[in-house]
Length: 201
Image 1 (cartoon, rainbow, N blue to C red):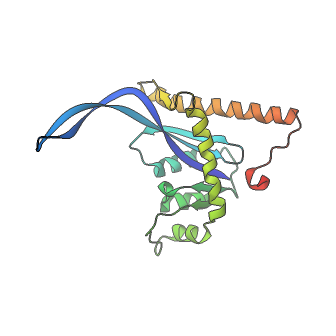
Image 2 (cartoon, rainbow, N blue to C red; image 1 turned 60 degrees about the vertical axis):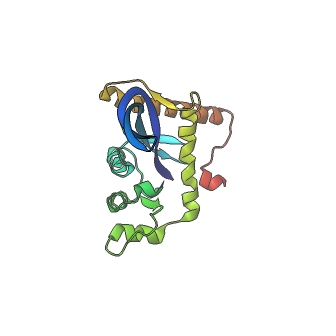
Image 3 (cartoon, rainbow, N blue to C red; image 1 turned 90 degrees about the horizontal axis):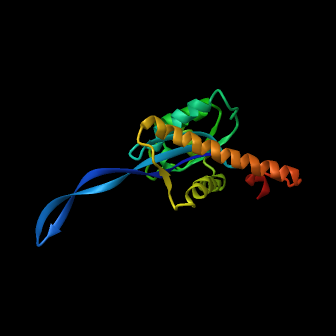
């Protein structure tokens, strides 16, 4: 099982924002400083919490197109044929279903309420095959975000240059995977069998 999600990354950069303020029945506006946030997007193997791909974007960037970008990055690197992609409604979109089907990955994505599937071929197919029990494992990806954020209660990026911000996401991913590898190697030395969650439970 694989999954996709994103989390906020706090920066030291401030933007100016105009905010309406009501004073004595008068509507006025004032300029305030608002801390800028980025988004860290990842695709991970949920069974072992190994990150396959990551991307850093603006906080205003929607998750859906970033998923397609990351899938194309891993397409020719990892053999994901037959995998199941668990993701929430932010990834509910026909182009995502089409790309996942092309890669022979089963899209187990919760579709938004009131969605219409009549003329959307791949979305309609995914809707019929959605498995709520398997979707339950989507929450495992939060284990990565929670562990990365726990030190300072938030992920922090202090790089101003966009290229360095992109490197920040890659470095975070590599660092996480090194720790996962260390845990798996320790378990192997201690002869502890590490089973995928779907099998273990």
